Length: 365
Image (cartoon, rainbow, N blue to C red; front, side, top):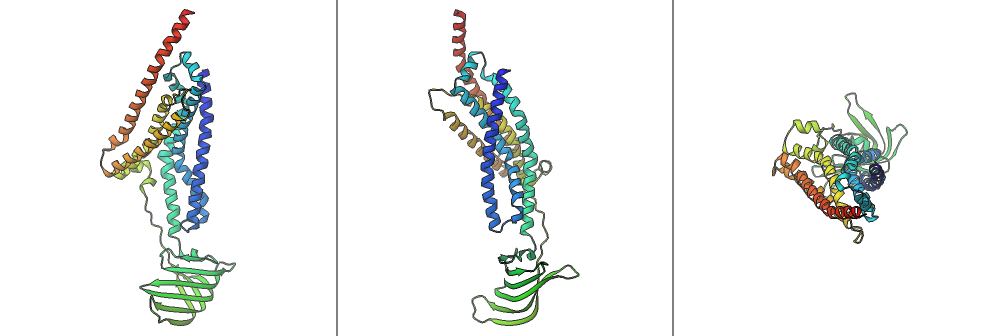
């Protein structure tokens, strides 16, 4: 009981610390990326906080898996370095004895990883897609931001409005440039307003302005003055185009094809990978106090990155039809499990001479 309480207490403290560090790094990176997208006009500034939250939900399962693996590796490595593990081994505690308390600590985390992998990941992806597509398919009337040149969603019209009245309908100093069929049309006006017709069509009406009309690359230009000129606001309906990462897990299993099965295999791989890394960290944490302190940690980082890349590779192979679904889903994890059992066996065999020596010393006393 002393061993289990001590081990679980240190795992909880170290795991939470590592998770907070990873959360800070991912949050900072995502903030920079999403704010940059908002600055370039790809997303709405009002959606920045929501998109950051959805992005964090998408990566929670990966951060939990990395935190679990790192916590076990850090704690057991410190025990070896400070000779605490030697004390427990001399008391008859083997490496296999550590599996129970580590498993009890890890099971709730693996359950959370499964939840965010099968539920949180697709939900966050779908919500992010809807927010981005809703902004891309917004009405052109939303582009009338005072003091900014804004391009329409159809990429052929540019608006500039110097001032918008308090009612949000009256506008001043308007500039509109459009290109259609090789001709350039430029409209300028001092005043204007927005109106909605009974059939629902919306217009920006320019008052007392000029229109410049000509062909690209030609010097001839027609200038026309107008008293009133209406520009119809283009409005696109939101088209629902769900992507595979945003499909629910039940939908992936109902509509079985290579792409959906590859996505399901990746989601299922996260809790399986967490389970394998949990077991692998126990023998991998072995450290000789006379040797370098970073060997085990560097090896752990290398194994984690290699494992993650192999998961992505297997997902691509399933999607391309190069391997069967069940082989891709279980093959890699069974191989890693076999390697883990083999490393366990090597470590346990190395402990047997030490146990025999301690038993002989006790017998002589």
